[in-house]
Image (cartoon, rainbow, N blue to C red; front, side, top):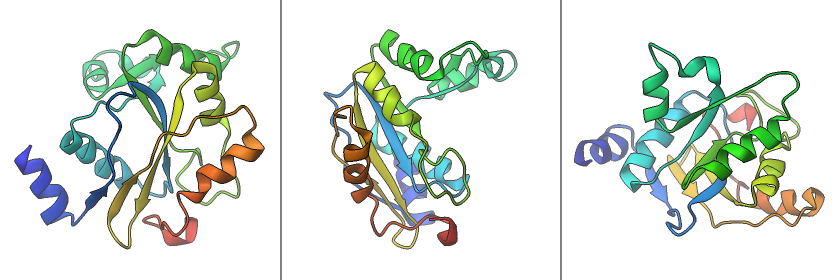
Length: 178
């Protein structure tokens, strides 16, 4: 733990602003702006420092030998990505069957510039009956921001602008994609 904190703060120069409410065991974490693979490293180290379980879903084919054990150990859960499968419901069900599951998602759906977020994060939270917690990467200040839980009302047109307020002024590793 001491080494992780040293690496995070002294070598990489990052800090964490905020924390997770430990009473919230299930949530969708909206991680943005997502412009680099380095976001993953920043996040994995932060979760170790904060001692909080953060999860992800991946296609079920990833969870077989030889790396399946590693993905599960990292908090991953296999997802059947068949054509007939409703992805929102399938992911919501993954959240529902676990005692604790904080699903990290990038709302952009990619690491390049997008004009609009994909809406899956919102509908997954609604279907699973969980909150949305904003998590932001600001590379100029090297700060990982963790916001308060937001409970979706079912009206994405009203809720999403409120969520996006959290990210105002944050700049990703690739600024032109932010």
